[in-house]
Image (tube, rainbow, N blue to C red):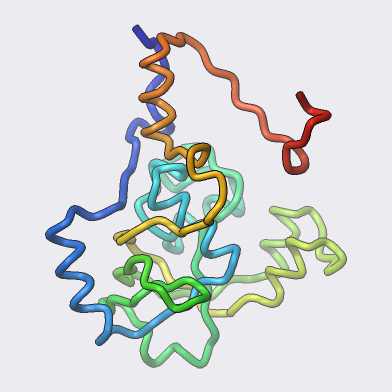
Length: 205
């Protein structure tokens, strides 16, 4: 029997809606303001939706954002090293306001889910770069992406219609729930996580 620890933060999040809600949201999205997710936001959306960012249930509000930047913890005290935010252009301030539900789409225009906007705020990008990347030099790809991103930040809960379709290695793209089930099935009592610095190839074998 598996003796794995509890999910990070105590709860394994799954933001994928059930079939009934999927139909309801699917009918609604055509009338909602749309946000097209770039590659960074898309990656964050996927990890929110599948529980990889547990215990988060959406893009961070201002309290969590400032706590992460200044203290490397969520407002609740749970350690967290980088803010998970959804930024948009300042020109959209009039339509993307608290209480609004927005349609989240990939770069091909397919609906992925929705965000129920709870907060709208702005961030000090220089301070964020200093605290998270320890540099403000735009030669750093993270800093360059930050400075190029929108100034308006939306915080709110997310509901996912589906996960992004990558088209490759589907048998190896397991969600946290699926990996935990696989560990339990194999009777593994301890698991070590390892992140390579580049895509896997024959040499790391």
